[in-house]
Image: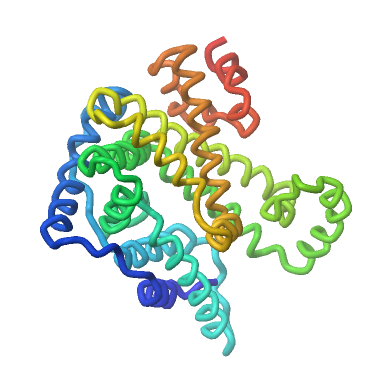
Length: 336
């Protein structure tokens, strides 16, 4: 149970300001990002053959507090059906405390997110493509790469995410249903769930460095849902990373330089920053990009883009977590 209004207020209040740049450059970046989403999605459609009949729409450009508020609203829409409403006099207090904690996390992430497609955001709750202008400008400054090239490269990634959810009609509801199953299971665990957790501790301890807290607290049923969500998110992130680099050489002259410096930047940061990233799962997210991109490249090389697009036929054709690590197994299952 989270008070998402408090989460949004806390995160927006605590988030750090963006880089100091001349007004002209800030306005140029905002205009560039808004217009480049249309160009980028056209490139992505031609490569992937997805959503060719959909209207081309610009994205929205926001600052860091704007991203926090949007992220809180999207998470509220995604988890609202599954999280229980705590009754009694302590309900609002507990929800407010959780909201403050969530706001702290959102404030940390708000200085790092370059863009995001939220399939549950926007006034009509049907999706919202956001580009966080101060973070894009800060990144291009830190890496010393051409601004226009980097902005288009970022838009290629985020527009791929938008196409995944707008061109694949069943994906949005499938994702929401799986999240609801996972959250409902975790929220309803109660004392039986705790007893089961302690019962699994001896086996978990034997795993040593392989111990994963998120998986430790799950029952076998919840683990199955978690595995499906992890496989899906790895596919979505890796597919977007593959597309941005595959399109890049034709439309982003400095793509090789940008990729090399961006990959190095993902691994950087001080000790405290790396600790926070590990605790929040940011490092795991980076591994998802790499694993998902390897899966996508292997499949496209083996059966072409149209063969890869079999992943979007139905939930049954999505790769499992094991198939993400062994893409040849997915190719055998779908293409004989």
